[in-house]
Length: 596
Ligand code: ADP
Image (cartoon, rainbow, N blue to C red; front, top):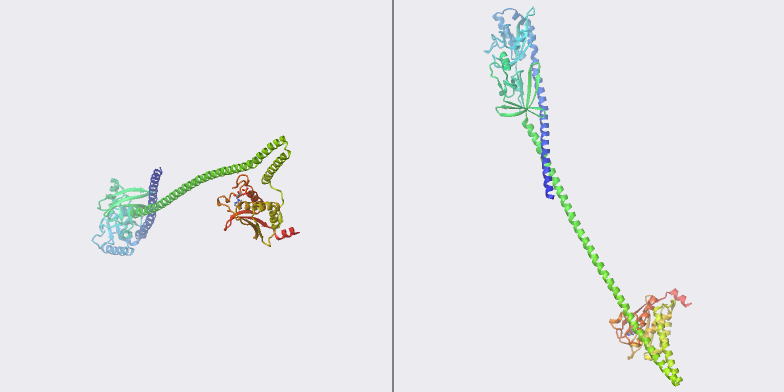
């Protein structure tokens, strides 16, 4: 599809270029020919001016001579030989002075009486010129002018004839003057132009190309030939038509003329000289003009080619750029699509994770619930079953009248009920946040109170407690009652862990960077790594059913968090567990306030 469009565009461009070239060729040819024509016109004007100037220089002379007394006398009466000779000599001298070709006097019968060329073999003296219009015109009283080839001399020239009048005004003779044109014609020769002068019959009599002389520019009709022959203008010269083809280009006349050097095309301009009856033609060879036009066309084609190549290169570059952008855009789109896909994958995975987490939480909750119900059912069922037994026995004993023993049984039942009430209280403590306000107080007091509370339990276990509190401990922030509960818990767990073993329970405390760290260390088996992060979970216990609810550490942990502190577990390098109670130390100002 693109290739077809490209081919169509190339065809269009080539056609356009051809058209442009054609138009440029037309315009360039027209311009070159027009410019040539302008130059030819200049040459034409110069040529005509030169010719007219040449003729004007001589035209007054025969008239002046015709009025000369000596000339009139000469014609008035027949002359003797000496007078003839002196006239001849006078004519010769005057002719030489004027620079004309020949000067001569013709009798009314047409016979030449005296001439400047009297002393030459081809002298006009004795010749008859009755056939020449310049003579007949002058004889008729007018001024005669004629261009012709000399019948006697064979030399081309322009002839003037002036009538000589007698006293009564009648024409008694003619003064004739001939001027040559050879020098003029020779001066025209140039490499650039050909110059022709044709007579009223269209016959060329002056030409820079000698072969064109005495040839017809116009068709040589019978009348033309007859008129020419009557005046014997070209003497015995045979007349032939010029080998000529006329054409026209851009409103300009073109002539193709054959010469010895072959046929050539010329640009022709012409101007009529009415006085002389001549037409002057200037011919300019069109070959250099056409060459110039061709050069212009060639330059244009070259320029067009360069411009087209440039445009083509630019177009190609743009196309390549567009292609690259398209490829980049595709890559970008692909990348974006991949990102979207990955994001979707991640979102799916994340959702999955969330679901799994929720499932796990749910499972954890169920496990805790399971542990709690197991503990609770035991804690409650066992005393309930025992109470039922005591009640059954009490009933029997009352039936038998053993009141004192029945009393005992009822006492047992009461203590079981108390125990269940204690468990219920314990549970309530877990569920409900106590509204004990936070205070600032010395840690030592809490430790002392806790030791007192746990005294019975510790005595029973047989493990002594060593307390080592740093002397300058800052006050701590928290609830003193709940802190006691935490410490009692830890002491009781330590005692449990050391059951069947000897050793002390060590309680110590030190200040460290705005905190007070209290440790409770025992010499038991320590906390296994596998359960270390679960011992703070509610209802987690490793103890046999009935001996632990698994709530002690969970409650203690939450209490410490309430104080803005912490509860951590680790094992001592020398064995045994170390529980660390982290408390916030009170500021100095707070401490002073508390001391008040
Ligand atoms: P209970 O004492 O009712 O089991 P706790 O929350 O106080 O509940 O303790 C949870 C579990 O932590 C105990 O069952 C025990 O396995 C472990 N534990 C607590 N204190 C210690 C200790 N000092 N040494 C070793 N294990 C301990």
